[in-house]
Image (cartoon, rainbow, N blue to C red; front, side, top):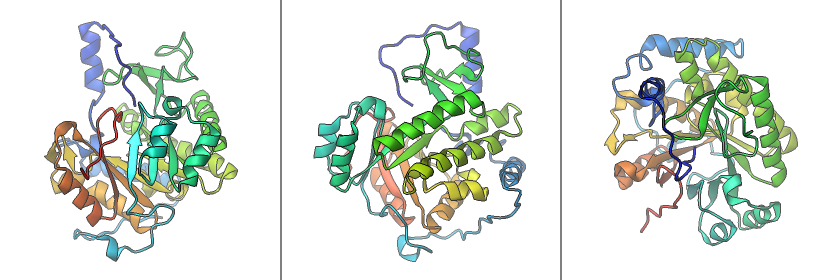
Length: 339
């Protein structure tokens, strides 16, 4: 998600309080401290049951890991497509072709609407052996995108839900709605045609919000959505990478697991600069290790806004053979942690 500068929205206080109750401004529910609902065994069992029902193969993927560290040298499979020693940058604002040509990196996740790269420019960057990944939000609609219509508002069209008070101009969507999915399918086809190496899918964990609102099929519908995105993209380019951010519980579905090439995870080890206790991130870490051990790659992202200990974060990423990135919350500046 991106901040639209200099935009002021005035809402009645009751509306603000209601929205703040429904939204979590900072982090996915499953890594919050003292969140009894999302960390309870009952909740996680329900999610797993629903996820597995997406394949009608209960137990098709069993997550079994020891609690000890799992360094790269002991990995169960060679990581395909992206070397774990690669330098990752994520820059969604204030970037252009000249910057990307000059910057030293192996993988860049960029916003195609911000960078406005041409197919030829993408080709030149790939000629430098750089992988260029397109950001794409699938769980929220953004009013600064080309698909947005001037008369859209919550409920019009019907798949547009409430505005996110933490990110003005971003609206939750009923991602299972055919009209919204058609928009995303068109976008993914454009991204493939442009020559991008893959798509970084944001707001995959939107299903958690709708589950909390009583939609029992929310996980299944997100799985099916991403499986179809992958199917369409890979029918055009079999080597195109599908990389969901957050929502790693969904790998309990075999079809979902097979549809993705890697995963991204925000705030795995730190919240506002404070280290997350082991028990609060243990399940997420187990899921990510399952992804990595299968030969897929894992990006881990932390934000410097909370003054995290960058050295500790990078050592943790190296220990688990994850590919780290440290950035600002707005992802508008490339941070060089080696300086």
